[in-house]
Image: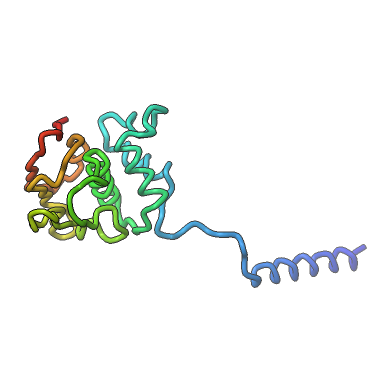
Length: 176
């Protein structure tokens, strides 16, 4: 009986050792992405009303779209909660102002650091976008009718170092 138990123990150790050395074909999550629940938890802890993220009606809110983009598409590595909030605020701004319809080429919602998100109005040649100091957004400038619709989201208040906000509104842009 003792020899049989010893043989079973050796077999288990060898199997475990072999399994550890063999590569796994099971995909692992990207080390740079975070899941929806974790991002939503972090963001919700800073929001006055987190229902725009969690409620069943929230599927198409700019806030929900921003969290979904961050958890499902964005591959950027967030170094802190502050950076998560900053990226969330800018992504919410993008979705709330119908970023797909902005005039000109831009790098918003790219995989790059949000401090590099900018663009050029194809009609006027003027630049717009984000400016940062020490990794914190200090300016958000959109002039010459780049924004054509939507509303300014309250989440811009999450940009705690924002010193300058310049929005030259088109007729369809609303305040919130």
